[in-house]
Length: 166
Image (tube, rainbow, N blue to C red; front, top):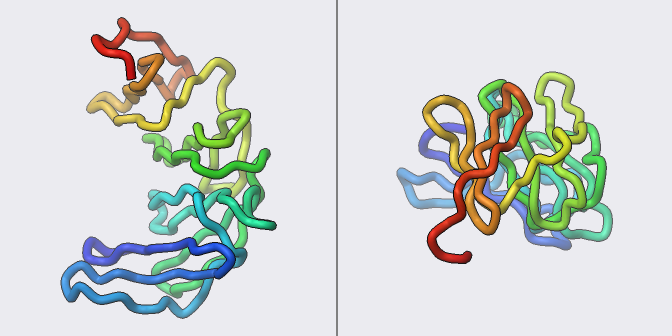
């Protein structure tokens, strides 16, 4: 993706995808379309320039994953998620892996861009709907059980409680 292009995907039951050009304020159709219809999925730009789309609510897309190549404008399937999910989040870790959590995920998963496969995230990792990457590479995870997650060690350390319940 470029700094002026946004990939917009999902409109179950269609395999819809659009490219929004920020400079011209126009939508264009990419050369390809999603490999399966999906909505409610997570998507994120990977360090290799591809875009991961994982899970989502559909008749057959809730466990599937695919990547979009902005150079060829094509989508292609990659390994499936371990469990069906929709409404989850995707967070890019400093080592290039993607942490998927929340939504309908019963377990948290990691996507390895090098092997294009999913694995279970470390036990005990809590992933609320939002996570913010800190300057030192760790992540603050807020919401009802705030914690600091260190991807280097796989350990999530609770922080003091928030001032107000969320």
